[in-house]
Length: 330
Image (cartoon, rainbow, N blue to C red; front, side, top):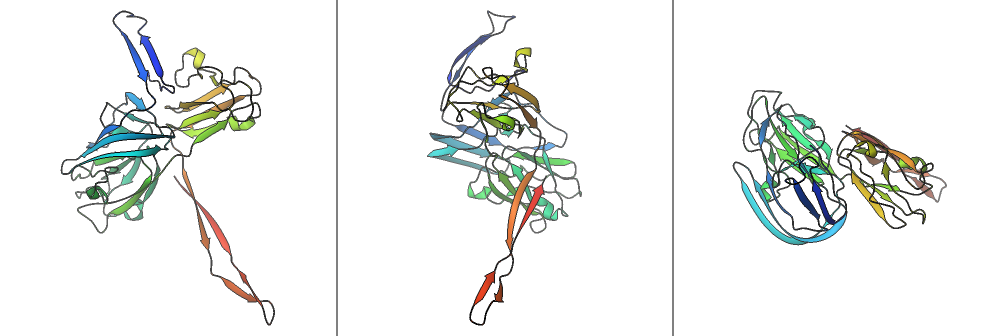
């Protein structure tokens, strides 16, 4: 298979070099398009997987669109129509196995061992675009995964189609940041949790002759890296070192771009991708390292009790002690 992410609007004719006459087409890339999606959730065996064949990327742009969203499960059908102005901010690439199907993550699944002894393990934090898979592997009882907000018309986290027992699993790809509480409909008291979905921070490289070590970045599969020429007025390019050898996983920028312009590329496979500026080959070089997973680091600030210490017979001072704790969740 061969995939390519189109980053600029235009008309792109193409053909098969072996069958030039019968295999030809044109890809037309637009700046905006109404979004109509149908999300379908299924219960699948733990070992099942499917390759993605088409790609779609969302960049930080503001669009006005009219969209119809339909979410379907075995027991519940929710349909909503809205027309609104929406700001799309996620920088994560998702794939779909075919038009109109639920998104498929490019990253390894994050497993929740779903059973009556789950406890605090039901509370997890993930990135936008992550695939969370609930696996019934700790007991032989029937279980479900029910979104607390799904009954209120929230189609961003659909229920499992039904009950599944030991060896079964249910997967869901989260496409928007937020907090998603859920429970087992069979064991409502003991099996409850929250999936906290965080947006990926934008990856921006200030591309100029003084870029230095900041040209080297480590990103997550599906991240959109943007090179912005905002540090000088010289012309620059972004050239993949491996692109000339036929590696389409990191394409060159279409040409030179000056101050105020930018070039973006979505990395869809893990690996190491060296690159350079074709105008300033010596001073402007870097490597994008793309990894399959990346820990989520949260910083919690706790303020201790206020202590009042006498300083003189007529005055006092207040001392507040603050402790900062950093927790890393993998």
